[in-house]
Amino acid sequence: MFTSVDDLEDRLTRPSEALVAGLAAGSGDLVVLGAGGKMGPTLCRLARRGLDAAGRGGDRVFAVSRWSDRTAAAALAGHGVDVVPFDLLDGDLGRLPDAADVVFMVGAKFGTSDAPYLAWVVNAALPARVAERYGGARVAALSTGNVYPLVPVSSGGSVEGDPVGPVGEYAMSCLGRERIFEHAAATRGTAVTIVRLNYAVDLRYGVLADIGQRVLSGAPVDVTTGHVNVVWQGYANEVVLRSLAHATGGTPFTLNLTGPETASVRRVAAAFAERLSTPVSFEGSEAATALLNDATLCHRLFGYPHVPLGTLIDWQAAWLAAGLPTSGKPTKFAVRDGRF
Image 1 (cartoon, one colour):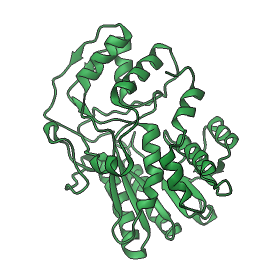
Image 2: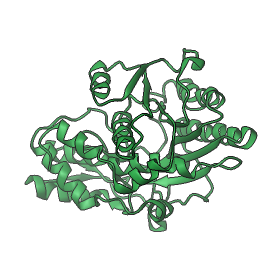
Image 3: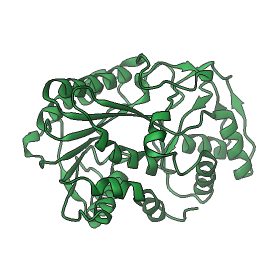
């Protein structure tokens, strides 16, 4: 269990032996674009700790973001990460540091239903400029399972070779991001990995935080979107970093990233009710389809997530019961029409 944000972040950023071994085989600096988002700070710190443990203390980790949260930027700097304040939409990308490896984490999702142009300029236009700036680097581009259609719950989820079918302009623009990086791989030979992530869990935010907070507050839990995938953010960040070694030119390496379970929202809510000693109520009825990914390839290459769903629920319940901080940024995982 965790007693503070510092305790949580320490756990999230502990590099595994496999990550250290993988990093030891590489060389050069790492640039993380969009490092100020939900996952970016812990990924940067994980990379820094991993590189140090791999004997690559001389290689730098550059965390690029506008850094409106100066406290987060200062904390990263205190852990040996090079913080780079930069507006990727307006700045000259030529001023960014050179790097052997790039993690692209920039994305626009919430609020884009009212301003769809924002989704397209961030999720599709910006990647074209980044792909040109870092054409000679290895790139891990974060994408989303939203590029797939809703699938029958009984299917086990979409696999990497399944047809895409984005619902709504956010999801379409994310597919646009993938296509831009595919173009860079095909025309410039840029080594690219596309990582389709479904719902990282950090305890301060995530699907489990969303469900647990509703249970704790006494609000009914909508089970229309009745099934979901989640994964511990520490594992997700590690896979993103390790996936750089699989980046390929010509045709990018595409990877689904999530946990192995198809989690029932109803059962997760009931588990929270038990752990929090509070009643739970439900509204709606489970639809036959959901946004689900099959991450079998990921687990085969990088191992099963080391924190199982039951433990994540235990941790999340204890975090909420202790009144520890949450981000106030819901995932909106239950949205079915693609409007975020």
